[in-house]
Image 1 (cartoon, protein in one colour):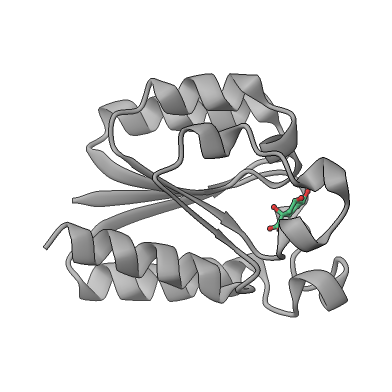
Image 2 (cartoon, helix red, strand yellow):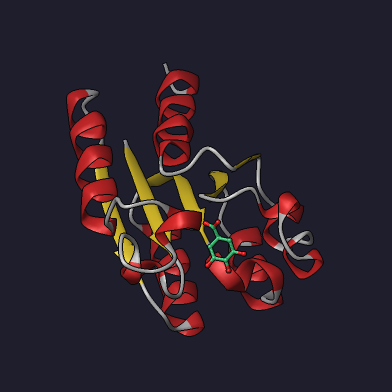
Length: 144
Ligand code: DQA
């Protein structure tokens, strides 16, 4: 089985960008921890970050065909703007877990609406980078 992890725009700057909001862990730290957990459980994992909406959509399309059972996605700011990412996720038949490092509901009102939540099976916000592990744990458990 395979899980695909997708990170949206500006998340390449994790650890450097607004550490008061997003913490000091880097994207590599997050991906490495997820890889360790997935591999221990005998899963394949692929992690991808892009600052480009179309590249994220291409990655969702690829996940339809590469045996991916579940997508963990932090769409970052595209969460609040992208009908195109929602449409791509609607064409994916596996599980989708939406993750936000910060509690978007405690922040500006433009972060309160998520297009991706219309598709997500689960949504995690405000647990910091631990939210990705929580998402992965739930996927690994529900596939038992
Ligand atoms: C974010 C929240 C979004 O509103 C923001 O645009 C991000 C990161 C989060 O992980 O908390 O870039 O998705």
